Image (cartoon, rainbow, N blue to C red; front, side, top):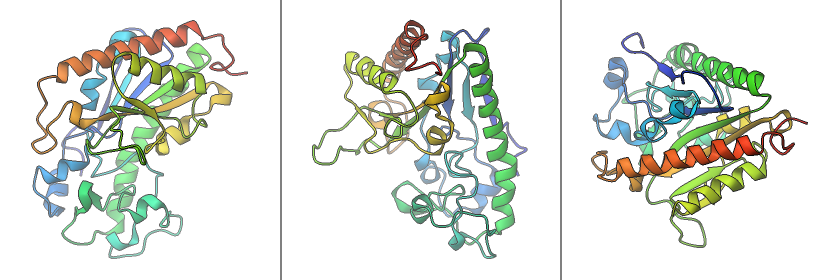
Length: 291
């Protein structure tokens, strides 16, 4: 099913010198042939849920001394930013397991662990699937990905005494802040202060604003399962989600990179360096390190 390509990879620095782990779980664009055969969508439409080229935008992470974990499998195939068993019974012709979460908001919206739709409410599948196939994807793709991510976070925490997970995503260009009409360039999500220290999130906002971007916190994206699951500030484990507005760097119709893609990647590299320096300066601060 997925033996035709490497599922994910870790791009390691020569030596991990900063307490950061960067993660790009939704930028994968290698589509299994069987999955494409099952889909009713064409080769471009099926890609609408990708976080296009986000692993390239944050590709400087190893240069700064941090590992970068990136998916090659697409989000439309398996979404690792969900609980392991958020399954929509409407997608399958046999019953889902009793332990599945069938009532989450994400399942209701068609965006469970095995998504039913891609962006703009386009149905992925021509017909229902056997539930065994969903469970196989979870075993073969979801669980190994999270095992790898956990290992990177645990290694970082053991080496430095604390760690910062940066979960990297992109958002549609038409996103606006409710009540203001503001179009953010970046959104920093920390689950409303529960997945990372306020100082860390505020620093991220200020660095992005200093680079000339419009940056906001938590609205409309506060972070998904990964941010919520791995962020444990009281233990010195901080997780922030960062959303980049796709309109800044990609044509959302053709999915081709815009001419200023390199400039945006350069700005993000400056941001990454600023974050590393901020954490180094405040490493002894109990706001970041475990009590």
